[in-house]
Each structure stands twice: as C-alpha cells, then as structure tokens.
Image (tube, rainbow, N blue to C red; front, side, top):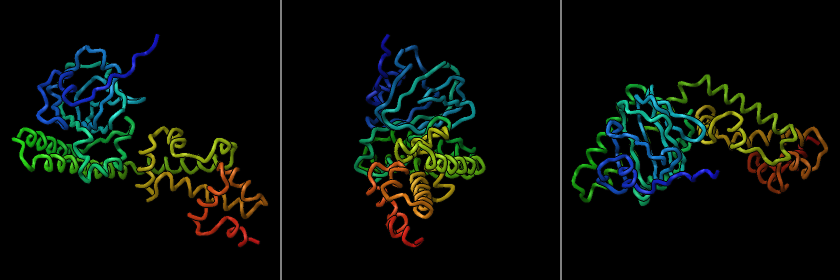
Length: 303
C-alpha cells in the first residue's frame, strides 16, 4: 500500500479553517491562542507541513506533537521553531486545556525587510525536537508578553505603520530567542563539553580510517553520530569554542595533513586522497587558507 503524501497547508487562512478558527486578520501572520485550538479527527494531522514559519510556546498538553524523528512533550513548557516544509504529525490529540501561543508567518511578510535577509541565519529553525528551548519563568513572561503585544497590534486598524510594527515584533521575538538559546547552551556547559570531546574523537578516528574513502568528513556525518541536528551542533560548538562545526572539521583535517606531511613521504596527491579529497587542488587550497602556506612549503620546513 502506497503511503499518502504529507498534506500541505499553504496559507494561514487554511490553517485557521482547519483549526475551526475565525479568518485571520492578516494574510501573512497570525498569533493563535492554544486555548482556542482543538484538533479534530481529520486524517491530515497524521502527516502535514506548513508553507510558513512557526514559533510556538506551549504548556499543558498530554498529547504529543511529532516533528522529524522525535516528539515534543509540552508538559513542562517549551518553545519550538520550525520553518516552511518541515513535516509534522499529531499523535494522541487531547481536549485538555492548553496554554500558550503559536505565531505563524509567511516569508513574504519579512521579504523586503532586513529580517528577510537574516532569517536563514537563525539556526534554531532547523533544530530537532530534543533541542527545543526550555524557558525560565522570566523568559516565559518575556515571550508571552511579546505574543500578547503582537496579537493586540494585529487587532488594530491597519495603517501606514502596521507592517513595520508587526515585523519589528517578530524580529524582537527572534532576537530574544537567540539570547535564550545562548543561555541554554551556557547552563548545559558540562553536557556540551562532553559533545565537543566526542566530536574531537570522532574526527580523529574518521581521518585515520578508511572512512575517508567516502570523502571529506561533513557536519551532517558527525551530527548524526552525536544524535543532534547539524545546525544545533554548529551553534553548540560556536558557543563553547568560538568556532563552528565546519571550522572544527577543517582544523582537524589540517592537523592530520601536517602530521602526514612531516612524518611520511606520501605525495601531496596521496595525502589529499587519504584525507578524502577528490581533487588535490581542493586540498591544497584549503590547507593554504588555514595555514598561509602550501603543503609543499610546510613540508620544506622539515627538510
């Protein structure tokens, strides 16, 4: 039996209709109070995706909201961020009261603003469920206040300033989210340090094994091994060490290359292939970028 394709919710108006809510007051953004939201038995909830961004702060549901390979458990209250095209499913929907808000907005809302250029830099829109943001009481109050203010602004009569104000609220909320994610990284220092150590061991093992026959190591490869999303791994490493995941990988490759250049008679071509590079020139370019020397210049210093 062929599995049905995920249902695409294309507009915010359609989302409101599926939730049995009144029509949205703005076509490109809506702030939905979870107390007014009820899931019916519509089969689309088994697999669906949005054509817009979603930021949710939710607490109190005993049901699970599945995203990717994991579940969001909202009993303790968390904040989640998802981007267009990510597939969800709702399992064990509940009629129990739920508190919180869901802000959804189309990319067209911010397209002509600075936020439109920057939104892809917010890595938390690609975090997995295990990496959701757990808010302190003070942080929870800040986000809830912003949701209330956005909701109030959307209810005002539209004027020349409406769009700018709405986008500024979205921008402010996302900047607070960056701050709170940074706090979460800091408070989980010991766990993060453990991940950094495991990453170093994995990189060393990869570069000294036949795994390089598959190519240069990637962020996705190590993220999968560490059971975290690529964006989360990169943000975690940057917060802990000041360098993102790709930089860590390049540094590990350079260190292994230096070892081979200084202790073996392998040619530059052989070393490049041994490290997973398809083309020796790509290896030489990367090496010089990181050391300001060509591989031959580095080797010459040991002769």
